[in-house]
Length: 117
Image 1 (tube, rainbow, N blue to C red):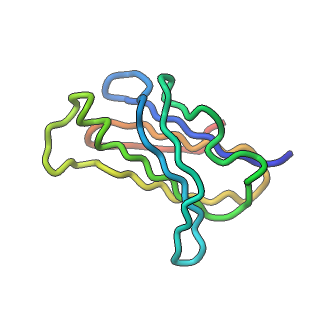
Image 2 (image 1 turned 180 degrees about the vertical axis):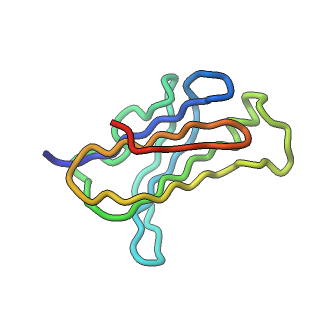
């Protein structure tokens, strides 16, 4: 089975999906980041399709960068300047051809992630 990567963002402060968050996916090669995809979360907090589809999948090290600051500010969840959380990078490895799901659980002062299904 060819691998692929999906993601979504949940707003844990308000208990709902986080729509409108820009996400950039990078492939890590040594000390270099190569941008390979960009997406924006929809009303369900998900991208409209896999951020890394089967036809482009390769094992290796990747980084998702979630532009959470604009969302947090726009949702009225923070007025901090500078923001405590702005761009959130999550670096992870994909070692086999499989479905990898890397979600972001977001609040104004903390976040978490895990390998989902």
